[in-house]
Image 1 (spheres, rainbow, N blue to C red):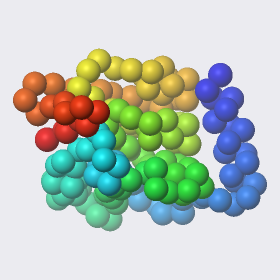
Image 2: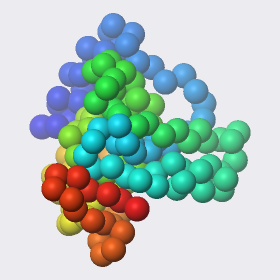
Image 3: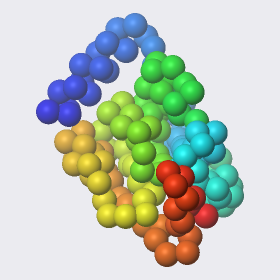
Image 4: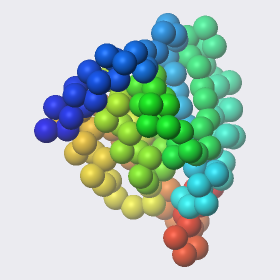
Length: 148
């Protein structure tokens, strides 16, 4: 079912030429959620920098986005469509995997077990893995979750 919705959205956006990733490089995107006020991933930039140091820039681009929700729907679609790999904390913005290309990879950073994201990813032909941030690195304060 999700695959059907994905195809319909792609047709709509491609018809309007809203997103077509033209880079020949793979793109790894970290969603830090720093500007959202909830579910902040405090060391996303440091981890992205470590990943960037290990990869050949001729083949990969590594980006960090602080607030996916501040983007327009077209910008969100373009962002997720361009990602070869998306690393994001569990939350509403991860629903944008519907825009990802088949065989892309999503790493869901979570304090708990895998969620509905795995089911969506399977339907969308996207590879999915959970990075569990349990124990001291994952702390809850009200509705805020800090991945450190």
